[in-house]
Length: 285
Length: 131
Image (cartoon, rainbow over all chains, first blue to last red; front, side):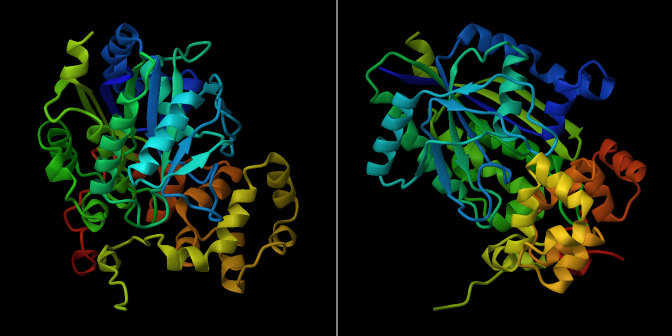
């Protein structure tokens, strides 16, 4: 049986990818960010997931304003790296797990989550920066990746509650897959930031730290945060944090906090990171 | 049916990209999307006004694009992730764009971020916003 052993939350700031790709990781500004992931890289190298489900948002790369799916599951065998205007990031091709992805799609749709199936998708920094932060700069990514794109560009995104419940449905789907697979689920984006308009640069550390606490101890409280509150308190683009709740919904009610990291800023954004283990699945290891 | 109440319209210095904005700004955003291709970036740079004729844009939208009025583009229906592609075509990063939209110099904006960013205090509602 497949099982979700842990969840990883992390920001996916594009400048982090650029700093890595341009060899700036030792500059003090970036060192402060990358140092926060050193222990996490060791953790994931030990856990060795077979598959990572990465909940992220597309930034007008694969999806323009022609079609805007609320939830889109990547069911392809390969996901090429997109050119976002500066040329594609020099990172390996992302390989999917089409069988598990198809199983998840079939399972959650029948579980009343009507997501969109995507068989052809280029992936942008929203997906590749979290992989780089957790796996460094390998020749090939060490696991299969199932992308789950969530619309947070066109208002309104799905509610936090909907995201949390989708996470729970994904967990049921994974646990009904017959092959023994170790799965880690990533919730990416955030934390507080606004990159648009005269109010750009907004950071709210108090909100962010309360959100980190809630992710660990009281995710139900977080599912009640309204869209307007995310935007008012954590910046217009801080609303990305609903994606973390997909990850949290896929975990046990009581989780083990293995890592927590928070720093301001990376470019325009507060960087937050958590590793939460699923005690029930880890105990079976 | 009740009209949708846009409680987020009280957030200052912010244009929320909702379905109404998306409809208004379709041309701006699809133009920006075309800049994902290197050949299109070159064609646009060679003849900006001519290139824009292929898109359904109002005169205000065309002017905002040609003059790089970044906030105006958002007001007219642009979305930041799309307009950032025009920024990339000009060689601007997200942080450089943000500085322009806040009316700060690059250095002032970078310093604000290093000092912890813009506080939400005084920036939650239009009534408390500047001054």
